[in-house]
Image (cartoon, rainbow, N blue to C red; front, side, top):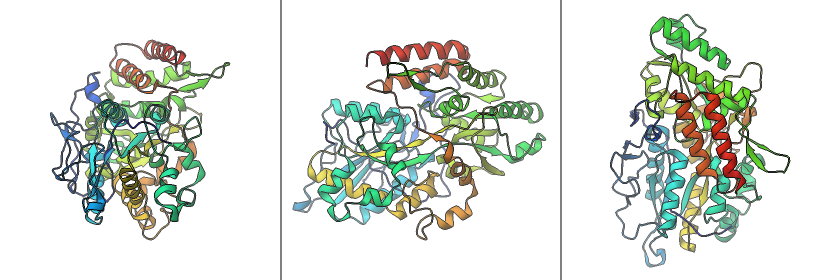
Length: 489
């Protein structure tokens, strides 16, 4: 489906992350400010050529939207005329900081560019995760610029398709890749493809990064504290473990990721039995997370922060604290597996997302899908060629090896040129794979409410964990505000 394009995206690629990958530190302190949520933005690096792409962010004060190609005509929505010998230049926007796939993006863009004589890909990093990317996409659209390929977080599926122009993947295939017309049906399971189908039933893009949250544990600290080295099984045990760790070792017990999205907290709240969104008697969606169970779940984390058994800080700072051995348990995406595994100098493992008492595990599907937002046949065709490269068995395998994302393509895990050997040797992936039966959709607010509703949840989270309000006060106020917003959609 084509609508008016609103921004250009930086193209992404995949290769295994270098063993010397540096882990970025966050740019904020443990305050409630939104600056805390910049996932590595302070230390992002800008490349100088399309073959040396940005994929790890931009340094503080650097314009992350600066064109990094040395070719002329590489601004958003521009491209050389391949028929005259010039390369078609396209942009791929992503939100992969260095510690979460940025180096993989860099290397695979380089690989594609070096092996392609008619397309030049420029990858551009967007801080603040998928919300930040959507905001930048809006700004580009307002300037009349047009993207080629973009990563869209699951929470923004409807918002994106309602407000931006895109080309459905099957439309691109039918126009420019007719010899492989069954690519989507042949390579992806139906339920996986459905993750990128909007509420109107349109296939907006192709699932690319699939993840779920797991609990990383420092077994050395658990042993030192006299705790079971297999880690806690429930959220109540997480709290108990954290308290014991603080008492016995003086170290922090727990950190739950706090980027510019509410993804991890959704897993906690919905595992408690509450639902982020429900359908009312009139058939309309409404926020419904401020139940007794949902409030109790958020208050559990707030109490841990208050007791100084848990950390409240930026995502990068929290992950770094775990990697440095100063925090015993880290609740974050399996996509952090590579950076954690390479940086940790201790016995590290992953366990499944904790249960809430005796209730079923509910973990939101994280990651993103790829959407073509190019305008003009040259740009669209080039975007599809690059996107198809990203979905090759080899590229998918490299993406998983370098990040920890679960491959969406069905034939990658068992392929000799895919992940067969890797999965046999990397047991830290098992927790994420074993809990796929508990995966639920990342909450996508209907209509045009996506960005505003997400920001309300982030403000609520910061106020609760910062101690400005109780979980009950913050969650009820946020729920009411979101429902007022939804009522006018």
